[in-house]
Length: 434
Image (tube, rainbow, N blue to C red):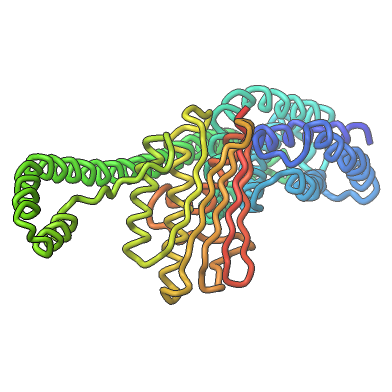
């Protein structure tokens, strides 16, 4: 039993790779997670070795059975959608199977008269060593780059799209594995076997790099789109301010003539004409469309944009803003979250009668320790949901909708919760500022 147990210990470095990728998406402290994974592992590894010895079931089948069972424990320790954890699990399973085939190739050189159904010390030691070495080599690139994808990409559809590719790789590596090592010594099959393994691991690496660059390009493009939309709003507010300043300048320039007219009407005691003139003059004075809601200039521009937008749609928008000038949350992220909230709220309000439309938004920094963003809006009472998650109505921003808000909050160690009751939709965001 000791030899198959040695090979099954390879699940430990394999699990380490799973958690590398999700280092910022752990549901519990690391000590509790180690305990949660250690308990089933200590049960499954000896049980798998016992099952192999007693029943003769192929060792690789038992090994992958252990991995599949451990996957469910792995997923429960994460705060992610199952599409993400399953994608990472299958991605690493492909690498694990390739390493297992390399171990079988090494075993075929050492013990050419047997096959994959027999677990030897050569196979077990090679497989375990290869898994440990691979986990060590992958630690830095995965924790630095891989976690970016799991942190920022929250579209289940994209993660599900990777699964067929992983399944194809798994099937190919299962089929290439020789049942009996002696067949590798026929003609040039041994060379072909090693070539396929080398090609598989090369394709796996290239696919991983390609997926990373495609996703990061999409995320960067989405952020650029969000920044551009924000700049467009700032430009609109700047033009509004410029128009107001020009109209004010004209009014000041003409004010001398207005005073003279008023003096003549008063001296002549033409009080009715004086009153009519004052009424008409008041109508010509420019109105200041730019309101100061807070001292944060970018956020102020954003709020002015959406206040005017909401007013044009006959949607009352109640704002309560009280935040400090300097916060650890960047202006782009703060405006991105609030812009997404207001965009979704306005879109939702447009689906109901005018007399039922309203939006309330509170942005408050309490004791400079926590930032609260609380929003409530009316809607038709029919939320768009998929797999228990709310779907956005936002046309702009990252394109990720409410998940974009949640990701931004989590990037600052905060939380973002969404809920609804009857015909009211709630958004509650809390971000620590210390």
